[in-house]
Length: 388
Image (cartoon, rainbow, N blue to C red; front, top):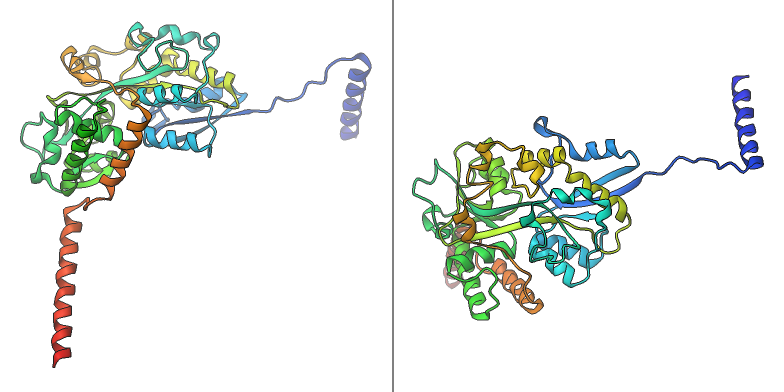
């Protein structure tokens, strides 16, 4: 009887709406917002931290977030350029944003939907990679340095040349992306990290080839496990990530080389042709909220461009010289810029050649020599028996 009464009531309600012209309200379907970000680059709820994605979905129940990660700017660019995937929010680095703007790969932002932009420090507005500030909003910034294990490296670390030191053969890690790897070798050789000189680029490529004999591996996110566990002794990486690794392994230390380093900014942008632009802008604005910005910075260890977040940080963080380096370090740093297309293509070709050349491990070389000697010995035995 209850079911019949409910059915009749529903029928009468629909009939009344049709007769009176009243709208029939339907449940709004959730929008799926696709976010593509670096690995280990958002507060995810582990270690009692705030789960930023879940918090966003809680505050905006009409939006579900599909969150995936990438390891390098070049990986991100290749995926977007191929058209194999479509995202609503991505967070590339400065030089890659410049390249995407130049190639018409980004949407202009509607700042009416991003009022929290006002909290961005003036020094991060109208940056060189987006001079009109129409396409991007800073997420974090930082520097690159050398992470080393003090129980395995006793000498003073103050130069990039330690990454070529044969004393640490098979204990050295290296960036697995061309721009960062080239940037390190460029600084070591005294070149600009934005050089377009072909002779200098060739010299850099040769320098990186020389390094392969001492390397254990090329890495990106794999560095966390390798350095935290003591599986490797030395690696170049981002200052913010060092702070996270040091929590797991207090023996780790960080140094900015005397030759200078890269100062980078990662920023939030919306790819051209995204499906949910307004929701994407809502998500970007959410990440600029003081509590959300603080949760992210405390979790990932990078530096904040938000005045509202910086105000909440303690003096120990602001004066640690790592998250917020000295004026001297910043003055000796250089930001990547987008290079001409032909230069980018040439660097990519050199990088493929570097990775394909030689051996990435001395043990692989030793193994190869042993195999050759073994085969040679077997051949000699075979020939002697055949002669008999």
